[in-house]
Image: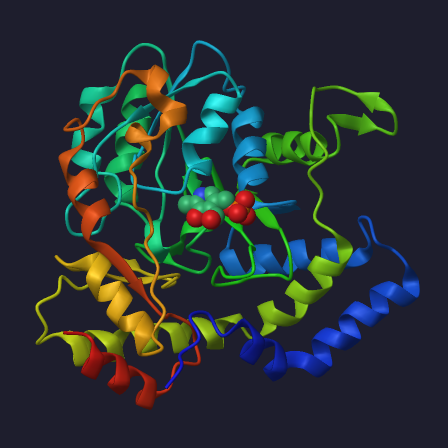
Length: 362
Ligand SMILES: Cc1ncc(COP(=O)(O)O)c(C=O)c1O
């Protein structure tokens, strides 16, 4: 058997007719930049997430930048986040001249350990950026109460978690600003780069819309230093089709996760843990194993692809050497990064495939 990790082609085939028509319609109109498909998508995203404002943009990375720029995060500011995430979470903080301050993760959810945040707050702290890793929001109840107590902003990096919830609200509707990514392999993916920011705050929404088009508040009038951060109309057209079926896809991902957990529970693995206040969008189904490298090789030989999200925690990355962290500073992130391994995850994995993975995963 040869298993596909994300089954992007299967998904395309499933919705091919509608997607092809949606793309053709953009080609026929040639409204490639900011066509009406963009505002249609933004309305649907607002409806789906419960956020008052959804603003699409060019990627999950640019979504983080737009959010941070809207809150004026810049030189002299500190931003608290997790070291166990994709580089973009902290890269954007540093890109704006601010300082990423890391806090170790919770051993069960792999998200920022909310109980350790308070100790990292200084008078320079401006914001907390929790990441909803693998699809599950961090403990937003505790994080929001800390933010309220110290008057800090919260930006949720929801690149992996579109459609997830915490205490019944989607993680796009939490925090001051929430972001997501439409990278093809994300739970809701387009056919290239894409992303979105969400907020309930009208002023912030207007500012992010302007920042997205070079800080422009009127044609060729630039209120802010902004960026070229628009989503392409073609990507919006594709997402308009895929979003219609997303609730179904999300349920299928949750069923796949349940099946994995049932079939792997007797194995010598640490399985994913979802807090009872949260639901996950299951961007990844990641397990912890002791012999990762040899197991990955063995699985590859029998047609089972795996991935590592992420092998090096951010405080040990070369680009962040200047921050002065060292090995041992965040022990849970460090141990999890040596053991974590993601199994094929998508809405269309068959029972036969799960049984095969169970049989081969020793
Ligand atoms: C946690 C996290 N943040 C940010 C990003 C950046 O998103 P994009 O690739 O759309 O720029 C990703 C994408 O992998 C991610 O996983």
